[in-house]
Each structure stands twice: as C-alpha cells, then as structure tokens.
Length: 225
Image (cartoon, rainbow, N blue to C red; front, side, top):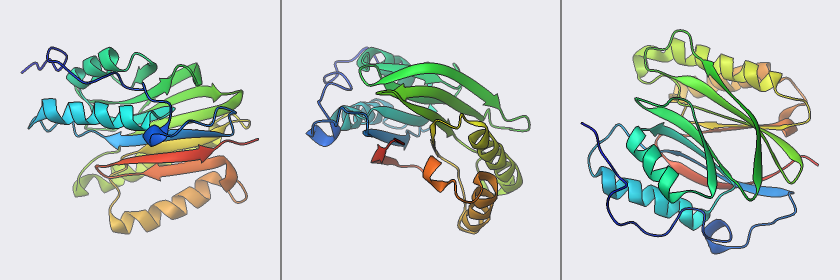
C-alpha cells in the first residue's frame, strides 16, 4: 500500500541548526561531520513516528553528509520536503534504496555513479558520489549489502566490488564508505583481510570504512590537507 508521510504536520526542517548537536560547525574545511543510518524502511510499523524521529535526529546533528540505507519512496518524499537544505542522491527510485545527502551550504556535488551488483537478489547496488568540501575532494560511497546468512558469498563478492571501487577513486580524494554491510562476526575477520588486500599497505590515511547493522552514527572526519 502507498504511504504518504508528508501530509501530517511536522517539526522544523532538517539541517536548520548551526552544527552537530547544536555546536557550531568548523567552517574552514579541515573537519566535516557525517551520519550513517539504516532507517529500516521495510518495517511499516509506526512508520510515521519513526520517519519523524529520523528527521528530528538529522535536524539535531545537522551533518554535512548523510548516508542512508533502506529508504523507501515515502521516506524520500518526506526528506525532499523537510530537508531542502540538502541535495539528495539516491541509488534507486522505487522499492527500497540507499541515499547520500549533501548539505548545500558546505558540500558541492561533482558527479555521481551507481554501480550495479550483477548477482544481487535484493535490488542492492553501490552508490558513489564525488564531492568537495571547502576545496577538499571527497569520494563518498554507501551500500546495503546482501542480507541473511544464506547470502554470505554474494555479500563478500559485493564487498570486494566496494573495495575495488575505493581503489579506483581519484588519488586526491578522501574516500569514505559508510553503509550497512550485514557482516556476521566471522565475516568481519574475513573482511578485514579483504580490506588490507584491497586498499594496500600505507594507504590507510586515505580510506575510511564505516559499517553498521541497523543503527545510526554521528561522526566528525578530518579531511586530507
């Protein structure tokens, strides 16, 4: 059934505060803030209340970059209405999908790309955004890797594609992957090996990988100078 989250009265717009948790943002470009969140859009229970909670949290932190997973069209419609201070780039436009949101006053979009996962059974892909903050280049990536224990092999293959794309990012850019990888405990060790092999020794300063399972995280990141 179609759900419209934009009809009811809502609090103020997302991104209206001056900085993370009410603190002023550092505007010189040496630092920027981000949030990554699986909003669990496929769970329709209390959808309106949870959607308002997402918007309220994003308004509180007012991050420069927002990575979202499991977005559904009603969430997207609400974010377009409530988060006009952000540019929203999505990995799909139907079903459920990922999104990267860029604060227009701080982050400038250069280009975007969607990398399909050829063997996915769950509409998964890799969303990549090339952007800049105060002249510092960023290569931003998010994904929601294949779910459930039975799809571990496909999940590992998708993560390998993520690492390959990280390697291909412009040398001048700080590369950030933030997403829901669905990694199990035993897969985390395997993924660390993949990460070391994929990124290469001596390149850790350039890459940041943030993986979450059903959660959100406010974080400040220092750009390369």
